[in-house]
Amino acid sequence: MRVLAAMSGGVDSAVAAALAVDAGHDVTGVHLALSPDRQVMRSGSRGCCSVEDAHDARRVADELGIPFYVWDLAERFTEDVVEDFVAEYAAGRTPNPCLRCNEKIKFSAVLDRARALGFDAVVTGHHARLTDGVLRRSVDAAKDQSYVLGVLTGDQLSAAMFPLGSMTKERVRQLAAERGFAVAAKPDSHDICFIPDGDTRGFLARRLGSRPGPVVDAATGTTVGEHDGTYGFTVGQRKGLGLTIGDQRPRYVLGIEPVSRTVTIGTRDLAGVSEVLTGMPTWSGAAPAFPFRAEVQLRAHAAPVACEVDVADDGGLRIRLADEQRGVAPGQSAVLYEPDASLGDRVLGQAAVRLPT
Image (cartoon, rainbow, N blue to C red; front, top):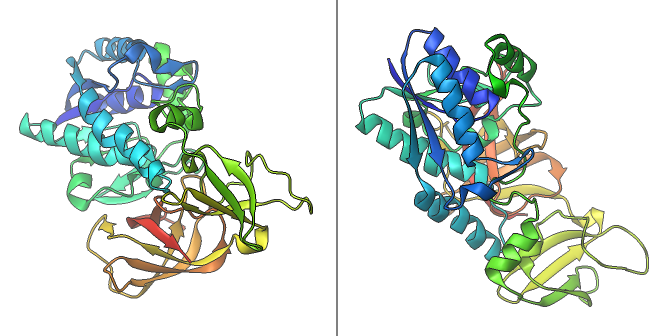
């Protein structure tokens, strides 16, 4: 097959490209330039997509003997990922930019262009298993990225390749070292690539400005503090509230109302939710018959929880949780899995959380 290898400049995508070559595919490497100012998108292990990363990707492509190109998708990335991120926080929601990048950039813009150029598939270094169009968790639970791939449709998965899903990250680095790749020991990127200093609140403050409002205690309805912008908070947050309340009990963010600029907080016993309503779902394959039982993961690093899923009145999903969960924020992705201990949990699909109840 003619395969386009998305090469970020990291060890995972380098090994994924190498495995595609080993499998006998006709491979071309491509690095995505996603920032108008690429010199500021890496700082140690933070960020990605810098000129340094492009050079690392090119060196690997040269060693593999495959063609290599840089595609400038900065404008598309800014519009579909960065601006979406800012708008979601401004609206009181908590987005996942990695999921949005997979949806809008890597498996929309890139895949569409690859198909137009005659490629059969796109190979990436994501840690997830894909067999006969079925997306499953990686064997390396600590590195599993199926959550941020849950937004992909069956059509997109049919043209994707994830060769790293059956191995651990330790094995990936070992394979890179055996091939002499300079990126074998390169640190993984962390946090949000377009916020390399890790200061999300500061980034949003620069974009949205000061929007002061009250912090209200849910139990009493009284104002217990002030804030500079609701975008500095997310539902479930406990640290960094900057409050001193007489009883000294920890408080959690329970709700964010951007119009009145109100942040509502409360004690742990008020923070749990037993049901989640979502927007319209996307399915990795055929839509299941409703109602059905599954497991749902509500944050990128959260443990899955058993649930029952049905259709809500507005066409979204109503997810009833077997155990109460805290920190379920509007805008997060609820990724549904079919548990399978022997094969790895299968991704069924996902939907954006609209309202925890």
